[in-house]
Image 1 (cartoon, rainbow, N blue to C red):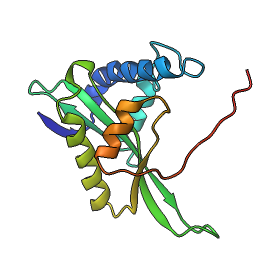
Image 2: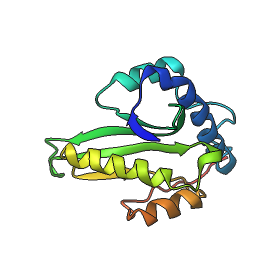
Image 3: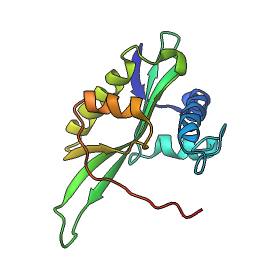
Length: 157
């Protein structure tokens, strides 16, 4: 098993996992997400993987098959009047194959992301968790994450 930066050869495996995580979200919020779709296309993934602003990490098994990933994105706040200059590493998504969940791999890739953020002088690591995704919320709380802010909504239809 190994954690490494994603490569073009990983796109097929990443797409399969993107569908799984999308379906988790669609089960929770079918008013927003469409089952059996993916957040990114193959072409979009090719651009994301080679962009230094959007590092993607994969967790590969002994045969180098992707069984999990972490999508991240550097966000810089520079020169704003009321906010200090800072760099955050935003975790856009962490997902592991359904058969691999609960084995501790997500904690390993999370720790890799934290170490990467520290090496890149980030001030914080942030992410969003969908309301209703209690397993993810519990996982991130066990990792030591705390609420940063709350997003609220009023549904109109």
